[in-house]
Image 1 (spheres, one colour):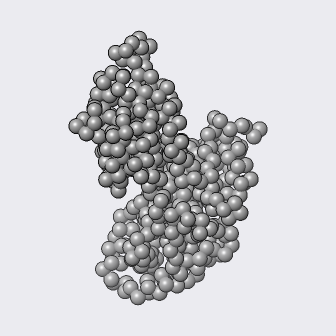
Image 2 (tube, rainbow, N blue to C red):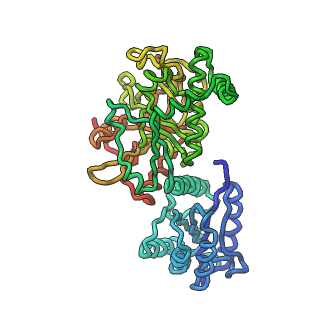
Image 3 (cartoon, rainbow, N blue to C red):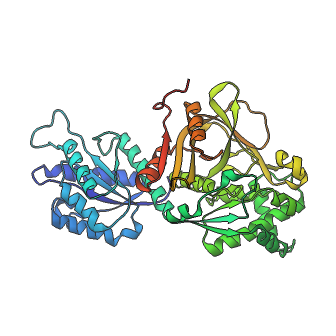
Length: 477
Protein backbone atom coordinates (compact mmCIF):
# COMPACT_ATOMS: atom_id res chain seq x y z
CA UNK A 1 0.00 0.00 0.00
CA UNK A 2 1.41 3.36 -0.98
CA UNK A 3 2.20 6.08 1.53
CA UNK A 4 4.05 6.27 4.81
CA UNK A 5 2.67 4.85 8.03
CA UNK A 6 3.76 5.85 11.54
CA UNK A 7 3.93 3.18 14.20
CA UNK A 8 4.83 3.53 17.86
CA UNK A 9 6.97 0.54 18.82
CA UNK A 10 7.53 -0.92 22.28
CA UNK A 11 10.27 -3.52 22.62
CA UNK A 12 9.45 -5.41 25.79
CA UNK A 13 12.40 -6.75 27.79
CA UNK A 14 13.22 -8.45 31.10
CA UNK A 15 16.73 -7.90 32.32
CA UNK A 16 17.59 -11.54 33.06
CA UNK A 17 17.04 -12.57 29.41
CA UNK A 18 19.86 -12.28 26.84
CA UNK A 19 20.43 -8.75 25.49
CA UNK A 20 21.15 -10.11 22.04
CA UNK A 21 17.48 -11.04 21.55
CA UNK A 22 16.48 -7.36 21.78
CA UNK A 23 19.28 -6.25 19.47
CA UNK A 24 18.31 -8.84 16.87
CA UNK A 25 14.62 -7.91 17.08
CA UNK A 26 15.41 -4.23 16.55
CA UNK A 27 17.54 -5.09 13.52
CA UNK A 28 14.82 -7.28 11.99
CA UNK A 29 12.10 -4.70 12.63
CA UNK A 30 14.14 -1.99 10.90
CA UNK A 31 14.37 -4.23 7.85
CA UNK A 32 10.65 -5.02 7.88
CA UNK A 33 9.63 -1.40 8.42
CA UNK A 34 11.72 -0.31 5.42
CA UNK A 35 9.94 -2.87 3.21
CA UNK A 36 6.48 -1.71 4.36
CA UNK A 37 7.19 2.07 4.40
CA UNK A 38 6.66 2.25 8.16
CA UNK A 39 8.17 5.11 10.16
CA UNK A 40 8.81 3.80 13.69
CA UNK A 41 8.71 5.95 16.80
CA UNK A 42 10.55 4.12 19.57
CA UNK A 43 13.11 4.66 22.27
CA UNK A 44 16.68 4.92 21.05
CA UNK A 45 19.48 2.87 22.55
CA UNK A 46 20.61 6.09 24.24
CA UNK A 47 17.22 6.67 25.89
CA UNK A 48 16.97 3.23 27.50
CA UNK A 49 18.93 0.00 27.66
CA UNK A 50 18.81 -1.44 24.12
CA UNK A 51 15.96 0.97 23.32
CA UNK A 52 13.58 -1.36 25.17
CA UNK A 53 11.01 -0.91 27.95
CA UNK A 54 11.69 -2.88 31.13
CA UNK A 55 11.10 -0.42 34.00
CA UNK A 56 8.87 2.40 35.20
CA UNK A 57 11.39 5.00 34.08
CA UNK A 58 11.53 3.40 30.61
CA UNK A 59 7.73 3.42 30.47
CA UNK A 60 7.68 7.13 31.33
CA UNK A 61 10.17 7.99 28.60
CA UNK A 62 8.38 5.85 26.03
CA UNK A 63 4.94 7.18 26.93
CA UNK A 64 6.13 10.77 26.75
CA UNK A 65 7.80 10.12 23.39
CA UNK A 66 4.54 8.71 22.02
CA UNK A 67 2.52 11.59 23.42
CA UNK A 68 4.84 14.14 21.80
CA UNK A 69 4.21 12.46 18.44
CA UNK A 70 0.53 11.62 18.94
CA UNK A 71 -0.74 13.60 15.94
CA UNK A 72 1.14 11.40 13.50
CA UNK A 73 0.74 8.03 15.21
CA UNK A 74 -1.39 5.46 13.39
CA UNK A 75 -0.95 2.55 15.78
CA UNK A 76 1.29 0.82 18.33
CA UNK A 77 3.26 -2.41 17.95
CA UNK A 78 4.22 -4.30 21.11
CA UNK A 79 7.09 -6.61 20.21
CA UNK A 80 8.19 -9.28 22.70
CA UNK A 81 11.59 -10.74 21.80
CA UNK A 82 11.45 -12.30 25.26
CA UNK A 83 8.97 -12.43 28.16
CA UNK A 84 8.97 -8.63 28.44
CA UNK A 85 7.95 -6.35 31.28
CA UNK A 86 4.16 -6.49 31.33
CA UNK A 87 3.71 -3.44 33.59
CA UNK A 88 6.15 -1.28 31.65
CA UNK A 89 4.34 -1.98 28.37
CA UNK A 90 0.89 -1.11 29.73
CA UNK A 91 2.20 1.90 31.66
CA UNK A 92 3.90 3.33 28.56
CA UNK A 93 0.67 3.17 26.57
CA UNK A 94 -1.36 4.66 29.41
CA UNK A 95 1.08 7.55 29.79
CA UNK A 96 0.97 8.22 26.04
CA UNK A 97 -2.79 8.88 26.26
CA UNK A 98 -3.06 7.47 22.75
CA UNK A 99 -6.30 5.91 21.52
CA UNK A 100 -4.99 3.91 18.57
CA UNK A 101 -4.99 0.21 17.67
CA UNK A 102 -2.35 -1.96 19.38
CA UNK A 103 -0.80 -5.10 17.86
CA UNK A 104 0.87 -7.60 20.20
CA UNK A 105 3.56 -9.87 18.71
CA UNK A 106 5.79 -12.41 20.46
CA UNK A 107 8.87 -14.14 19.07
CA UNK A 108 9.03 -17.97 19.19
CA UNK A 109 11.58 -20.12 20.99
CA UNK A 110 13.56 -22.67 19.01
CA UNK A 111 13.50 -26.26 20.27
CA UNK A 112 17.29 -26.50 20.21
CA UNK A 113 17.80 -23.16 22.00
CA UNK A 114 16.22 -23.47 25.44
CA UNK A 115 19.45 -22.69 27.25
CA UNK A 116 20.13 -19.43 29.03
CA UNK A 117 21.88 -17.98 25.97
CA UNK A 118 18.78 -17.94 23.69
CA UNK A 119 15.73 -18.66 25.87
CA UNK A 120 12.80 -16.26 25.24
CA UNK A 121 9.65 -17.37 27.10
CA UNK A 122 7.69 -14.83 25.00
CA UNK A 123 4.95 -17.45 24.57
CA UNK A 124 4.19 -16.95 28.26
CA UNK A 125 5.04 -13.26 28.36
CA UNK A 126 2.46 -12.45 25.68
CA UNK A 127 -0.29 -13.81 27.92
CA UNK A 128 0.89 -11.61 30.78
CA UNK A 129 1.19 -8.54 28.56
CA UNK A 130 -2.33 -9.01 27.22
CA UNK A 131 -3.65 -9.57 30.74
CA UNK A 132 -2.25 -6.19 31.76
CA UNK A 133 -3.55 -4.42 28.66
CA UNK A 134 -7.02 -5.68 29.49
CA UNK A 135 -6.65 -4.60 33.12
CA UNK A 136 -5.78 -1.13 31.81
CA UNK A 137 -8.86 -1.31 29.56
CA UNK A 138 -6.77 -1.00 26.41
CA UNK A 139 -8.08 -2.60 23.22
CA UNK A 140 -5.57 -4.65 21.25
CA UNK A 141 -5.12 -6.96 18.27
CA UNK A 142 -3.35 -10.32 18.18
CA UNK A 143 -1.29 -12.01 15.49
CA UNK A 144 -2.81 -15.17 14.03
CA UNK A 145 -0.06 -17.32 15.54
CA UNK A 146 0.55 -16.93 19.25
CA UNK A 147 4.27 -16.59 18.51
CA UNK A 148 5.69 -15.62 15.13
CA UNK A 149 9.13 -14.50 13.98
CA UNK A 150 9.52 -10.88 12.90
CA UNK A 151 10.72 -11.82 9.41
CA UNK A 152 8.18 -14.62 8.95
CA UNK A 153 5.88 -13.90 5.95
CA UNK A 154 2.87 -14.53 8.19
CA UNK A 155 3.88 -11.69 10.49
CA UNK A 156 4.37 -9.43 7.48
CA UNK A 157 0.77 -10.27 6.51
CA UNK A 158 -0.43 -9.66 10.06
CA UNK A 159 1.28 -6.29 10.17
CA UNK A 160 -0.13 -5.33 6.76
CA UNK A 161 -3.66 -6.18 7.93
CA UNK A 162 -3.03 -4.24 11.14
CA UNK A 163 -2.01 -1.18 9.12
CA UNK A 164 -5.31 -1.45 7.23
CA UNK A 165 -7.17 -1.64 10.53
CA UNK A 166 -5.36 1.45 11.81
CA UNK A 167 -6.26 3.41 8.69
CA UNK A 168 -9.95 2.53 9.06
CA UNK A 169 -9.97 3.49 12.75
CA UNK A 170 -8.18 6.78 12.17
CA UNK A 171 -10.22 7.66 9.09
CA UNK A 172 -13.62 6.86 10.61
CA UNK A 173 -13.22 8.93 13.75
CA UNK A 174 -13.86 12.16 11.89
CA UNK A 175 -15.76 11.97 8.59
CA UNK A 176 -17.74 14.67 6.79
CA UNK A 177 -20.29 13.50 4.22
CA UNK A 178 -22.59 15.43 1.89
CA UNK A 179 -26.20 14.47 1.21
CA UNK A 180 -27.25 15.95 -2.13
CA UNK A 181 -31.03 16.01 -2.32
CA UNK A 182 -33.65 14.01 -0.44
CA UNK A 183 -33.74 10.23 -0.63
CA UNK A 184 -36.13 8.91 -3.28
CA UNK A 185 -39.53 8.62 -1.61
CA UNK A 186 -39.90 5.01 -2.71
CA UNK A 187 -36.70 3.99 -0.89
CA UNK A 188 -37.22 3.53 2.83
CA UNK A 189 -34.21 1.23 2.55
CA UNK A 190 -31.85 4.23 2.46
CA UNK A 191 -33.09 5.65 5.75
CA UNK A 192 -30.42 6.13 8.40
CA UNK A 193 -29.92 7.69 11.82
CA UNK A 194 -27.98 10.91 11.45
CA UNK A 195 -27.60 11.15 15.23
CA UNK A 196 -26.10 7.68 15.61
CA UNK A 197 -23.58 8.55 12.92
CA UNK A 198 -22.82 11.91 14.52
CA UNK A 199 -22.11 10.19 17.83
CA UNK A 200 -19.62 7.98 15.98
CA UNK A 201 -17.83 10.97 14.44
CA UNK A 202 -19.61 10.90 11.07
CA UNK A 203 -21.15 14.29 10.23
CA UNK A 204 -23.75 14.70 7.48
CA UNK A 205 -24.17 18.01 5.62
CA UNK A 206 -27.15 18.56 3.32
CA UNK A 207 -28.04 20.55 0.24
CA UNK A 208 -31.24 20.58 -1.80
CA UNK A 209 -31.15 19.62 -5.47
CA UNK A 210 -32.83 22.92 -6.30
CA UNK A 211 -29.74 24.73 -5.02
CA UNK A 212 -27.51 22.58 -7.22
CA UNK A 213 -29.70 23.08 -10.28
CA UNK A 214 -30.01 26.82 -9.63
CA UNK A 215 -26.26 27.29 -9.32
CA UNK A 216 -25.62 25.17 -12.41
CA UNK A 217 -28.02 27.34 -14.42
CA UNK A 218 -25.87 30.40 -13.75
CA UNK A 219 -22.84 28.82 -15.44
CA UNK A 220 -22.56 29.69 -19.13
CA UNK A 221 -22.03 26.95 -21.69
CA UNK A 222 -18.84 28.61 -22.88
CA UNK A 223 -17.39 28.93 -19.38
CA UNK A 224 -13.80 27.68 -19.42
CA UNK A 225 -14.54 25.45 -16.43
CA UNK A 226 -17.28 23.68 -18.40
CA UNK A 227 -14.96 23.00 -21.33
CA UNK A 228 -12.23 21.75 -19.01
CA UNK A 229 -14.63 19.44 -17.19
CA UNK A 230 -16.03 18.03 -20.44
CA UNK A 231 -12.47 17.29 -21.55
CA UNK A 232 -11.93 15.43 -18.29
CA UNK A 233 -15.10 13.39 -18.80
CA UNK A 234 -14.13 12.45 -22.35
CA UNK A 235 -10.67 11.41 -21.15
CA UNK A 236 -12.25 9.32 -18.39
CA UNK A 237 -14.76 7.27 -20.39
CA UNK A 238 -15.96 6.62 -23.93
CA UNK A 239 -18.47 9.47 -24.41
CA UNK A 240 -19.31 8.98 -28.10
CA UNK A 241 -22.93 8.17 -27.21
CA UNK A 242 -23.40 11.30 -25.06
CA UNK A 243 -24.90 14.43 -26.73
CA UNK A 244 -23.18 17.79 -26.14
CA UNK A 245 -26.14 19.10 -24.14
CA UNK A 246 -25.91 16.18 -21.70
CA UNK A 247 -22.16 16.64 -21.36
CA UNK A 248 -22.64 20.30 -20.48
CA UNK A 249 -25.19 19.45 -17.80
CA UNK A 250 -22.93 16.84 -16.26
CA UNK A 251 -19.98 19.25 -16.29
CA UNK A 252 -21.95 22.04 -14.59
CA UNK A 253 -23.29 19.66 -11.96
CA UNK A 254 -19.74 18.52 -11.22
CA UNK A 255 -18.48 22.10 -10.87
CA UNK A 256 -21.21 23.05 -8.39
CA UNK A 257 -20.83 19.90 -6.29
CA UNK A 258 -17.04 20.25 -6.21
CA UNK A 259 -17.31 23.83 -4.98
CA UNK A 260 -19.84 22.84 -2.31
CA UNK A 261 -17.70 19.92 -1.09
CA UNK A 262 -14.62 22.10 -0.93
CA UNK A 263 -16.43 24.81 1.05
CA UNK A 264 -17.48 22.30 3.74
CA UNK A 265 -14.46 19.99 3.72
CA UNK A 266 -16.49 16.95 2.62
CA UNK A 267 -14.93 13.56 2.01
CA UNK A 268 -17.83 11.73 0.36
CA UNK A 269 -21.32 12.26 -1.07
CA UNK A 270 -24.64 10.49 -1.50
CA UNK A 271 -26.80 11.91 -4.29
CA UNK A 272 -30.47 11.72 -5.20
CA UNK A 273 -29.81 10.20 -8.61
CA UNK A 274 -33.53 9.75 -9.44
CA UNK A 275 -36.17 10.85 -10.21
CA UNK A 276 -35.85 14.62 -9.76
CA UNK A 277 -32.51 14.54 -11.55
CA UNK A 278 -34.06 13.27 -14.77
CA UNK A 279 -37.34 15.20 -14.51
CA UNK A 280 -35.84 18.58 -13.64
CA UNK A 281 -32.30 18.44 -14.96
CA UNK A 282 -32.52 15.95 -17.83
CA UNK A 283 -29.45 13.83 -17.20
CA UNK A 284 -27.95 11.06 -15.08
CA UNK A 285 -24.88 12.09 -13.10
CA UNK A 286 -23.50 8.57 -12.67
CA UNK A 287 -20.36 9.48 -14.61
CA UNK A 288 -19.60 12.35 -12.25
CA UNK A 289 -20.15 10.11 -9.23
CA UNK A 290 -17.85 7.50 -10.76
CA UNK A 291 -15.13 10.09 -11.30
CA UNK A 292 -15.38 11.23 -7.68
CA UNK A 293 -15.13 7.65 -6.40
CA UNK A 294 -12.12 7.04 -8.63
CA UNK A 295 -10.50 10.12 -7.06
CA UNK A 296 -11.04 8.55 -3.61
CA UNK A 297 -14.01 10.83 -2.87
CA UNK A 298 -16.66 8.08 -2.77
CA UNK A 299 -20.13 8.86 -4.04
CA UNK A 300 -23.24 6.72 -3.56
CA UNK A 301 -26.59 6.85 -5.32
CA UNK A 302 -30.11 7.22 -3.91
CA UNK A 303 -28.84 9.38 -1.01
CA UNK A 304 -27.59 6.22 0.68
CA UNK A 305 -25.49 7.82 3.41
CA UNK A 306 -24.88 4.50 5.17
CA UNK A 307 -23.93 3.09 1.78
CA UNK A 308 -21.25 5.71 1.17
CA UNK A 309 -19.97 5.19 4.72
CA UNK A 310 -19.58 1.53 3.75
CA UNK A 311 -17.70 2.54 0.61
CA UNK A 312 -15.39 4.79 2.59
CA UNK A 313 -14.60 2.09 5.16
CA UNK A 314 -13.45 -0.34 2.45
CA UNK A 315 -11.51 2.43 0.70
CA UNK A 316 -9.64 3.28 3.90
CA UNK A 317 -8.64 -0.33 4.42
CA UNK A 318 -7.54 -1.12 0.87
CA UNK A 319 -6.35 2.22 -0.50
CA UNK A 320 -8.48 1.51 -3.59
CA UNK A 321 -11.80 2.97 -4.84
CA UNK A 322 -15.09 1.41 -3.75
CA UNK A 323 -18.50 1.21 -5.41
CA UNK A 324 -22.11 0.80 -4.30
CA UNK A 325 -23.92 -2.25 -5.65
CA UNK A 326 -27.22 -4.07 -5.47
CA UNK A 327 -27.26 -7.71 -4.41
CA UNK A 328 -29.26 -7.99 -7.59
CA UNK A 329 -29.70 -11.42 -9.17
CA UNK A 330 -29.13 -15.11 -8.64
CA UNK A 331 -26.66 -16.60 -11.10
CA UNK A 332 -28.53 -19.53 -12.59
CA UNK A 333 -28.65 -22.43 -10.15
CA UNK A 334 -25.24 -21.86 -8.58
CA UNK A 335 -26.00 -21.15 -4.89
CA UNK A 336 -22.66 -19.46 -4.23
CA UNK A 337 -22.76 -17.00 -7.15
CA UNK A 338 -24.83 -13.88 -7.75
CA UNK A 339 -24.89 -10.71 -9.83
CA UNK A 340 -23.79 -7.30 -8.59
CA UNK A 341 -25.48 -4.52 -10.56
CA UNK A 342 -26.15 -0.81 -10.71
CA UNK A 343 -27.21 1.39 -13.55
CA UNK A 344 -24.42 2.59 -12.89
CA UNK A 345 -21.81 4.79 -11.20
CA UNK A 346 -18.98 2.41 -10.37
CA UNK A 347 -15.46 3.80 -10.33
CA UNK A 348 -13.33 3.23 -13.39
CA UNK A 349 -11.18 0.89 -11.29
CA UNK A 350 -13.92 -1.72 -11.73
CA UNK A 351 -14.64 -1.08 -15.41
CA UNK A 352 -11.80 -1.49 -17.91
CA UNK A 353 -14.39 -1.19 -20.71
CA UNK A 354 -16.07 1.89 -19.21
CA UNK A 355 -18.43 3.84 -21.48
CA UNK A 356 -21.16 6.44 -21.03
CA UNK A 357 -24.64 5.34 -21.98
CA UNK A 358 -28.18 5.53 -20.61
CA UNK A 359 -30.19 3.88 -17.83
CA UNK A 360 -32.79 1.72 -19.60
CA UNK A 361 -34.73 0.82 -16.46
CA UNK A 362 -35.17 4.44 -15.37
CA UNK A 363 -35.75 5.37 -18.99
CA UNK A 364 -38.95 3.35 -19.15
CA UNK A 365 -40.68 5.93 -16.94
CA UNK A 366 -38.44 9.01 -17.15
CA UNK A 367 -37.52 8.91 -20.84
CA UNK A 368 -34.24 7.29 -21.83
CA UNK A 369 -33.05 10.54 -23.40
CA UNK A 370 -33.07 12.03 -19.87
CA UNK A 371 -30.81 9.31 -18.48
CA UNK A 372 -27.65 9.97 -20.48
CA UNK A 373 -24.68 9.74 -18.14
CA UNK A 374 -25.22 6.27 -16.73
CA UNK A 375 -22.18 4.08 -17.20
CA UNK A 376 -21.87 0.62 -18.68
CA UNK A 377 -19.13 -1.93 -18.22
CA UNK A 378 -18.15 -5.31 -16.78
CA UNK A 379 -15.87 -6.03 -13.83
CA UNK A 380 -13.32 -8.75 -14.67
CA UNK A 381 -12.18 -11.63 -12.47
CA UNK A 382 -10.34 -10.75 -9.27
CA UNK A 383 -10.69 -10.35 -5.50
CA UNK A 384 -13.61 -8.55 -3.89
CA UNK A 385 -14.48 -7.45 -0.39
CA UNK A 386 -18.14 -6.60 0.21
CA UNK A 387 -19.72 -4.96 3.21
CA UNK A 388 -22.52 -2.85 4.59
CA UNK A 389 -22.81 -0.39 7.46
CA UNK A 390 -26.30 0.26 8.81
CA UNK A 391 -27.80 2.26 11.68
CA UNK A 392 -30.26 0.38 13.87
CA UNK A 393 -32.53 2.90 15.59
CA UNK A 394 -34.36 0.14 17.45
CA UNK A 395 -31.24 -0.95 19.33
CA UNK A 396 -29.44 2.40 19.11
CA UNK A 397 -26.42 0.70 17.56
CA UNK A 398 -24.41 0.85 14.34
CA UNK A 399 -24.22 -2.56 12.70
CA UNK A 400 -22.20 -3.95 9.83
CA UNK A 401 -21.29 -7.07 7.93
CA UNK A 402 -18.23 -7.70 5.79
CA UNK A 403 -16.71 -10.58 3.86
CA UNK A 404 -14.50 -11.61 0.96
CA UNK A 405 -15.28 -13.25 -2.35
CA UNK A 406 -14.24 -13.34 -5.98
CA UNK A 407 -15.27 -11.58 -9.15
CA UNK A 408 -15.58 -14.23 -11.88
CA UNK A 409 -15.53 -14.16 -15.67
CA UNK A 410 -18.76 -16.16 -15.98
CA UNK A 411 -20.97 -15.03 -18.90
CA UNK A 412 -23.39 -12.20 -18.16
CA UNK A 413 -25.49 -10.57 -20.84
CA UNK A 414 -27.10 -7.39 -19.53
CA UNK A 415 -26.71 -3.60 -19.51
CA UNK A 416 -25.37 -1.19 -16.89
CA UNK A 417 -22.41 -1.81 -14.61
CA UNK A 418 -22.26 -5.43 -13.62
CA UNK A 419 -20.23 -8.26 -12.16
CA UNK A 420 -20.59 -11.94 -11.31
CA UNK A 421 -19.48 -12.65 -7.76
CA UNK A 422 -18.70 -15.89 -5.97
CA UNK A 423 -19.08 -15.99 -2.20
CA UNK A 424 -18.64 -19.11 -0.12
CA UNK A 425 -21.90 -20.15 1.60
CA UNK A 426 -23.79 -17.29 -0.03
CA UNK A 427 -27.22 -18.67 1.02
CA UNK A 428 -26.22 -18.29 4.69
CA UNK A 429 -25.11 -14.71 4.06
CA UNK A 430 -28.36 -13.86 2.29
CA UNK A 431 -30.35 -15.29 5.20
CA UNK A 432 -28.29 -13.22 7.62
CA UNK A 433 -28.87 -10.04 5.59
CA UNK A 434 -32.61 -10.59 5.36
CA UNK A 435 -33.19 -11.75 8.93
CA UNK A 436 -31.26 -8.79 10.31
CA UNK A 437 -32.96 -6.20 8.14
CA UNK A 438 -29.91 -5.03 6.19
CA UNK A 439 -30.38 -3.04 2.99
CA UNK A 440 -30.12 -4.44 -0.55
CA UNK A 441 -27.21 -2.05 -1.17
CA UNK A 442 -23.66 -3.08 -0.33
CA UNK A 443 -20.24 -1.61 -0.92
CA UNK A 444 -17.62 -3.50 -2.88
CA UNK A 445 -13.87 -3.10 -3.24
CA UNK A 446 -11.38 -4.86 -5.50
CA UNK A 447 -9.34 -6.31 -2.64
CA UNK A 448 -9.45 -8.73 0.25
CA UNK A 449 -9.57 -6.54 3.35
CA UNK A 450 -12.53 -7.87 5.36
CA UNK A 451 -10.41 -9.05 8.28
CA UNK A 452 -8.95 -5.58 8.83
CA UNK A 453 -12.35 -3.93 8.44
CA UNK A 454 -14.02 -6.29 10.91
CA UNK A 455 -11.28 -5.74 13.48
CA UNK A 456 -11.47 -1.96 13.13
CA UNK A 457 -15.24 -1.63 13.31
CA UNK A 458 -15.91 -4.16 16.04
CA UNK A 459 -12.87 -4.13 18.32
CA UNK A 460 -11.91 -0.46 18.13
CA UNK A 461 -15.06 1.43 17.10
CA UNK A 462 -17.42 -0.79 19.09
CA UNK A 463 -19.91 -1.51 16.30
CA UNK A 464 -21.84 -4.78 15.95
CA UNK A 465 -20.10 -6.66 13.14
CA UNK A 466 -20.71 -9.96 11.39
CA UNK A 467 -17.61 -11.17 9.53
CA UNK A 468 -18.72 -13.68 6.91
CA UNK A 469 -16.20 -16.49 7.03
CA UNK A 470 -17.51 -19.01 4.52
CA UNK A 471 -15.59 -21.92 6.03
CA UNK A 472 -16.81 -21.22 9.57
CA UNK A 473 -20.58 -20.87 9.10
CA UNK A 474 -23.03 -23.70 8.92
CA UNK A 475 -24.57 -24.62 5.62
CA UNK A 476 -28.22 -23.75 5.11
CA UNK A 477 -28.86 -26.92 3.13
